[in-house]
Length: 116
Length: 114
Image (tube, rainbow over all chains, first blue to last red; front, side, top):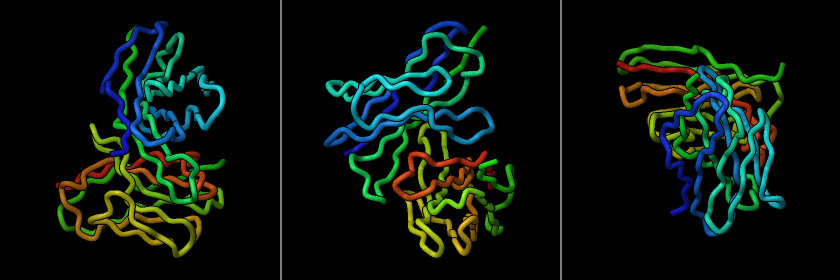
């Protein structure tokens, strides 16, 4: 079955430390890949997306993600986290070549806590 | 300012009492959708609408209704709420259906059904 998995439910990181959030997908072909952030009390915001090309994708707020075909992964990284990065992060996929009704499927989310 | 608004933001109700959560967008978007977010389950789509008068079921439509009489509004209706509909609900919109990944999300409505 097609799926997107975020293995870590909750991660705690010290402010200034590096961050990596994991995302794995299971699809017949490489889907379009996305990361969203949900800050407390707010809706989701698109951080970055991968369609094709360079496997290292830069996003907003200093985040980046690397697509690794061999591992079916699209992990989110940030070199140095700030307290304002505390939020819930969702990986999401859309099957290749959207035809107008291909659905966006979300992972279960990873909650990020930042400690001083 | 481009935005998706939802009302109310918080709602506590009792089983069986009909309720409506409103959603409005000011961006002239064709595509609108509703999601519910539950711990450990992520976001699951309830209903979506490709344009005015065109709605379709998402992954978890049971117990919900929607309507799209105007382009800007997409209310979510719970005719007879039950405790298992206690959740955080998000409305979202995008310019076109194939831009679902670029949806603007509303701030969420936290619903508790007792």
